[in-house]
Length: 282
Ligand code: PAF
Image 1: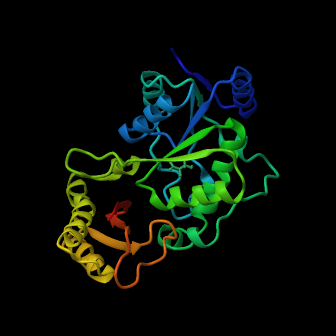
Image 2: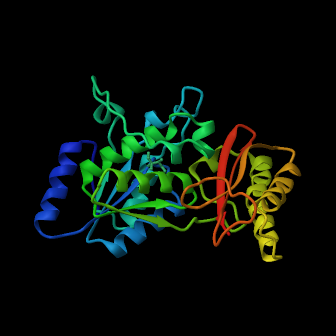
C-alpha cells in the first residue's frame, strides 16, 4: 500500500487522532530524508512495535549553522518514497520549512549540559535545533514510540533527556548502527565522499576497533583507550580530527582514570570537507 504523503501538519494530526480513536499505536521515525538501510532498519523496528508507522522527512534548517551544509544536504524524495512504500510506512510527513516555522515562530527547546560537549561543542545550537524540531514532530504525530539510530549517540541521549524532562509521553527507542560491508557507518553524508575519501573514511571504524582491542587486552584506562583510537586516526592523512572522547554513556562526561562497567568511545572526524561521526560502547 502507498503511504499517505502530506506536507500539512494539520492533516498528520488528524490522521493520527483517527488512529488513536481506533486504539492503534503509532511509531515515528524522524529523518532528514536521503533514506538508506539505517533508516529502513528503524522503520522495520517501528513496524514490529506499532500498529501504524509515520516517517517525517524534513531537512531542518534550525540544526545547521550558517557555515554548514544545509543547501547541499542530499535530497531524493522519489527514492525516499520508494523505501517508505517498500517498508510499509503508513504516513509520510514532508513539510516545507515555512510550514514548520511560519512567520513569527520564536520558540526553542534546549537541553543544557548533555548537549554542550562533543558534537554540541563544535556545532553550537545544533541540538537546540534538533530538540525544537523533534518536539514539534512529537506534537504533530503524537507517537507512542520514536526511533533514533545509535550512531548519533549524543542526539539519542539528548532526546531521551528532553522527553524525560518535559514529561513527553513517548518511548524513545535507540536502534543499532547499520554499517557498510567494510564497516563504515551508514550516513546520508557518505554521499559527499569521493573514492579516495571513501577509503580514508574507514579510519573511523578502525579507530573504534583499536579502542575495543585495547579494552579486550584488559586495559581500563580511559586515556590509553582514547590514545589507541587517536593513533589510528592520526595515521590517516585525509582525516582532520574534531574530537575523540571516552565518556560515560549516560552523562556523556569524560571518563577519568579507569572506565566503569561501560563507556562510550565517540569520534567526529572531517574527511576532506565531510564531517563524519561514529561510536562504540565498550
Ligand atoms: O538524525 C536526524 O536525521 C535528525 O537530527 C532528526 C532527528 C531527524 C531531527 O531533524
